[in-house]
Structures are given as structure tokens and as C-alpha cells.
Image 1 (cartoon, rainbow, N blue to C red):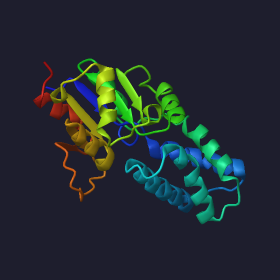
Image 2 (cartoon, rainbow, N blue to C red):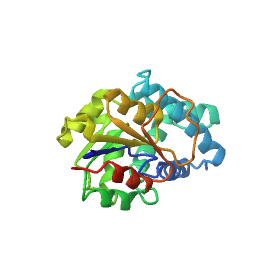
Image 3 (tube, rainbow, N blue to C red):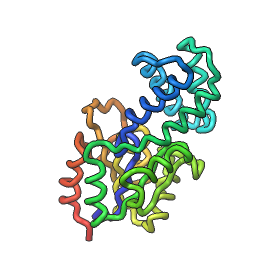
Amino acid sequence: MYKLLIFDADYTLFDFDKAEKNALTRVSGDFGKMFDDNHIDLYKQINMSLWKKFEKNEISQNKIKTERFRIFFERAGIEADFHEGADKYLFYLSQGCCLLPGAGDLILNLKNKYKLGLLTNGISNVQHPRLENSALSDVFDAVVVSGDVGISKPNPKIFKIVAEKAGFKDKSEMLMIGDSLTSDIKGGINYGIDTCWYNPKNKSNLTDVKPKYEIDELTELYNILKEVKPS
């Protein structure tokens, strides 16, 4: 019987694509070098590859902040200060607090019946403002940002932190919901709790990570919870 629902932030509840594109567009405007879709796609590829390395402890979160812009500017042939670009990007990204369709209603409805946790691999001075300026600013019973604790998903220790912060020890009462198999789902499995993979694009699971549940719409979570009612 689930009593604590732990949610990932970006791509699960928050529209990170929109926030990212807006931040990059504003950076390009500041430098007078307008980025087109090819530039944005290149940045996303570089950024994603670095965060995958972060999950494997191959790079620090602090290093990612500037390294992604160093590589991006170099590959795109952009002659600008990548340190300045990185700083501007983080500031603009911290203002991107849009939620994915249906996410706000889902969380506000669940708040009446469950304890809620938010667990995100992110940079502290980006993730906290985004949450605080969103419609979910005061909803979660526990919020844990990897940048605050020095541990990241899929390390089970960060799951223990959010569980304890919410006041839970019984792993059978917890469910992790997120879009990343290698971060959210693998981490939940590593910690020993049930997991629900949010897969809106119906991607094939080509990994050995096997979530207990899979949904392609957030509202499908209601059906899962109906079957496993809280006491």
C-alpha cells in the first residue's frame, strides 16, 4: 500500500524542453548570435551525454556547468566566453517553471491522499527557484536536489534521504515515478522500492532495468494507485 509517492522533476512534472530552449534563446540574444534548431539540438546532445557521465560518477555536477558550453561553443564555432554563456544559461534556466500538461492537477489531487516527495538530479540554484516559482511550490513533503546533498540518482542513498525527510522507512509504502530508466527507475530499484516509468513517447526499453509499472500518460497513475490503495 503506497503512502509516499516520489516524483522526478524534469520531463516528468516540469517541461524542461521549454525551459531549456527559452534559456538558450536568451543566451544567444545576449551574445548577438541567434541559435537555430541545429544549435539547440547540438547543445542537447552534449548536455545529455555529460549528465549520463554524471550518473556514472565520471564527471562532477560543477564541471558540467561550464564543460557543456565549452564543448558546445567549440563544436558550433561560436567565438564567445563559454564561462559567461554558462552563467547566463543557468540564470535563465532557473526562471523556467512551466509544468507539463496535467502535472499540476495530478500532484494537487494526490496531495490529499499521499505524502509526496520530489527527487531531482539538478543544480541547486536552478532547481529550487523553478520549484518555488511554480504552482507546486508548497506541495511536496520532501524535496531533495542532488546538488544539495552531493549524491545523485541512481545512487540508492539519495532515495533514502528523501524517504527519511518525508518520515518513511517502510520501502513497501514507497513508489518512484520518473521518466529516466537509468536514473529514476534504476535508482528506485537499487533502493528496493517499486517504480513507475513515465514513458510518454513510448520508447522501447532496451536496458536490463525493469520497472514494475509503465505509463505513457500521467493520469494513468490514478489506475495504479486504485489497485494499491493507501491504508
